[in-house]
Image (tube, rainbow, N blue to C red; front, side, top):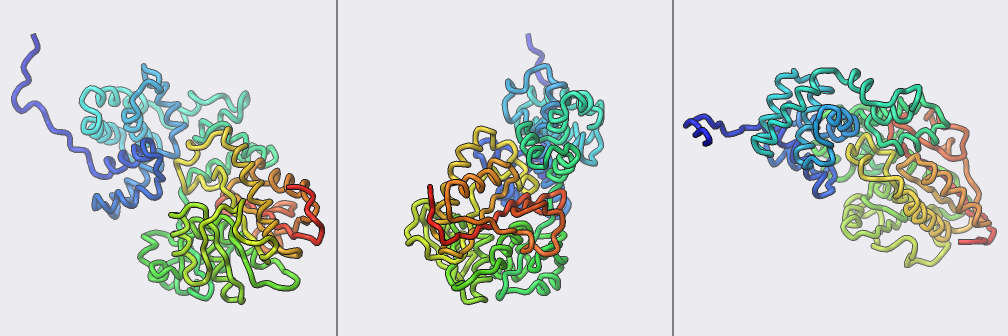
Length: 464
C-alpha cells in the first residue's frame, strides 16, 4: 500500500524566468521551426526581462542552440537511454543544463538545481529526476575533458573531431574544409568564430543618414564598410535613425557586396538597377539609397508577399517593389544596367547570427538549391544589358553554391566575362586570388559572403 504523502510535503516548482524563456525558445525552434533571433526578443519583452536577466537568457538560449552537437555527444555518454528515445522537451532541458555546466560561469550546484527546478515545472517530477541524474554526470568533467572522451581522435578523424568539438554537422565541416583549400587550422578558426555571437552591425543608408549620427548615438566605427557602424550593446531600435528607417541592422559583409556592385565601372547608361531576390530588404535598402544619389532607380523583386512588404519598408521611396519569381520575370530582357542576385542558399555563412541554422540544413539540400541558383543567375544575365554588370551573391561558402554555380553558368553561355571584384572592396585584406571574393568570419569578422561580378558582353548566349 502506498504511503500517503504528508501534508505540505509537495512544493510547487518555481523556475526562474530567464531559464524558462530560454526553454521556450528551444521549444519554438523545435516545434515551429521558428527563427531564434525573431522569437527571443519577443519572449524577453513579453516576460519583462531586461538587463542581466535578458543577457543570461540570451546566452543560455543561443549558446545551447549553437552547442547542441557537442552537448548531445556528452549527454549520450551520460544517459542510460539513447537520445533519440527521449522526448524532445526532456532533451532540451538537459541541453540547457549542459550549457550552463560546460560553457557558462554558473556554479555546478546552481546549474543543476535551477535546471531541475525548470524540469519539475515543464516536465514533471519523474522526468526531472532523470535530468538531475544525467546532469550530475555531466558536471563530473569540464568541456575539454568531455570532448577528449566523446569526440573521435584528431589524428584519426580530424573532421569528426572538429565537428564534435565545435558543434557543427560533419558535412558542414567537410564543406568548409573544401572551401578553405584543405587547411584544418583555418577550419578550426572558422568553427570557433561561428560559435561567438557577433556584435550588431549597422548601416547608415547614404543620403538618409550619416555614420557620424550613429557614432554620436553610441555606436563605434565599422571595420571595412564606409557606411557601417557597430553597436557594442543595447537595442538598435533605441537609435532614432534606425527607428526612422534611415539606418538599419546589416552585416558588414552584406554591405560590402552591395557597395562593390555599385562601385564597379560601367560604360554608357547607368540608370536602371535590379535586385532579383530582394527579401528581406537589407541589400535593396542600401542599393536603393546609393542609386537615388546617382540618378538611378532600383527595381526590387521578391517572390514571397510578406517579404516584399519588408523590402518596401527598407527602400522607402527610393525604389519600386514587385512580387514576382525572378526566373520568370515580368520585364523585358536586357533592360537593366546593374543586377544583384542574392540567391537563396544554405545560409552556412551566417551561423554566428543564426545559431539554429546549422541543424536545419543537410547535404541533401545543396543540389536543389544549386538548380535554383543557376536559374536565378541565368535570369539575372538575361535581365542586364550588354556591357552591364551582374553580382552573384550567396551567404554561404559552400563551393557547390558559389564558384561551381558561377562556372557552370559562364560555361553554358557565350556572353559573360568575370570581373575582378577585389578592387571594389578597398582596404579589405585576405581576399584570395580573385576574381571572386569570399569573406570569412574568422578573417574579416563578417558573415561568409561570396561575391562574383560578371559583365555581359555583346556576344549571344549559347545556352540556358
